[in-house]
Length: 174
Image (spheres, one colour):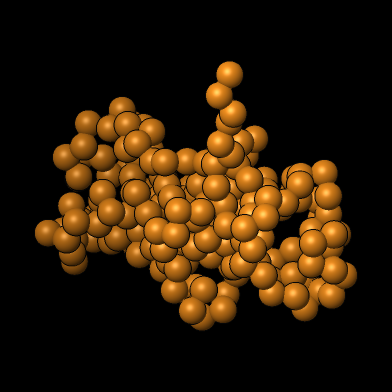
């Protein structure tokens, strides 16, 4: 497995994570997977920052406990502390955490004083998501070509560790 430390291209220090894959994957596939992880991680951070403060007054309330637990577990898993602990993120695990939050939120909108799914959808639409088609991966400042394999850039050694930056592709002006 190649271990990839994924960072946002703007060096903001936000949503960074570790990702593992085989070196024979196409850059297209790597891009798709890391963008999906980045976007889910962004959504989780947004939901946690919005709803955790609203739940603080309800701490200890048995009605709020499942949602508090879901937010806390997702926050912990999606944290960049996972990089420090050398633990890669999994899209499937992130998706599970996200779906658990969604389920708990849907059941607790009244408890939170939120007007339901409209507010929830608005929150998620405010998240700056990356588009798989227009995001590029950069290794040491060089754009990785989507039709090539990761091994074309890092070799066939499956113990390789690299840092990739995610950036929206800048479209030429017409």
